[in-house]
Image (tube, rainbow, N blue to C red; front, side):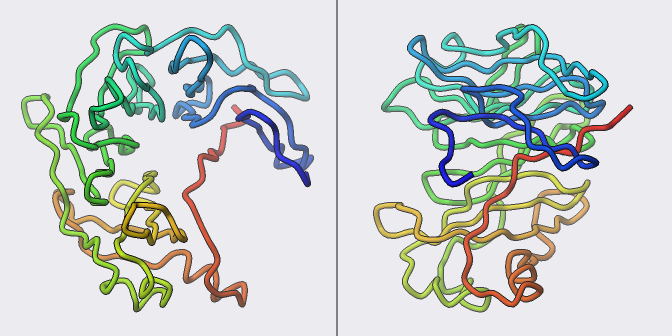
Length: 262
């Protein structure tokens, strides 16, 4: 379409028919359960932000949403709750929260029935979390310094402290990927999405001194097996540009998910 919607929408594409259909309006940041039977998402309105859940109902020709229930709201983050990510069993989610205008963001987890809320990080800018396919690691970013971080589950089942990873946020270290970084004051790693057990899609922005994003790249982060450090960084958007014969385009991780037809 030439003009986008006035509000955020979650849409689905039919692979067979190629049709583009509305699933939910006033909704964004979808996370689809592993079995493809439910979706959690963010909503905003005059009564504040909330994270909601709905079953996905299949008809012969369409995918429809069922009854919408609230998972998290101002009780967990008075200023903001958003960006949910399902655990593999779809019984819990990780999410981004902010308690007030002056505090930094944090990462929390909660059961989909709204119980068992637990905040996993201090209010110092941790957010935009994504749960690993095995449910043992939560990746997130840190807005105060642009770093990438992980929270790993311990042997006893509890969650450890967030670990800021050894991935540079200095523009000079990224010039080999894109010479636009020479005009950036900082690198801001912002959004994450797991691609496999040890592979993470990472949106990284060149930003000015005020933090305003100037351009965006996608990298594929390859972890060491303990997921406490980075083994290798792959320039995914650069590979896409090379294939397409383009240069210096902007990329961001997609919220799109393949939904099983079962």
